[in-house]
Image (cartoon, rainbow, N blue to C red; front, side, top):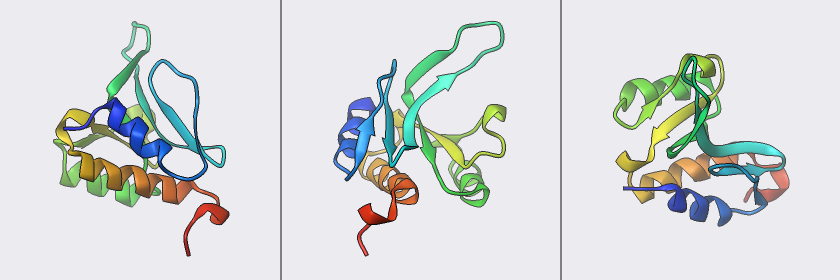
Amino acid sequence: MADQDDVRRLALALPGVEEIASAGFDFRVGGHGFVWSYPERVPGQRRVIRTDVAVLYVGDEAEKQALVLGEPDFFFTTPGYDGSPLVMVRLERVDVDRLEELVSDAWRMRAPADLLDD
């Protein structure tokens, strides 16, 4: 089981990462977000920052759909993210090794070329 401390530790261990001040967590590389806490929006209510759910950049719609449809216990999306290559992961359901893979993949897709290992 993972949590926001694991997200923070894993993200900050990657080259060129900066944490943006937020009510939860928000990590960027080269000015591009790659993992952040889920800003849940419920109609008629204030937005709630969910630190038990991470939003991850996944690159494209095909990868997003593969995760959401293939592992619905771990991953989900909402209409607000339609058309965006982003997926939400329930941190309490994913182990730290899998989270490390997800965070690293998201970082790799957003990092500038000079930070990537050849």
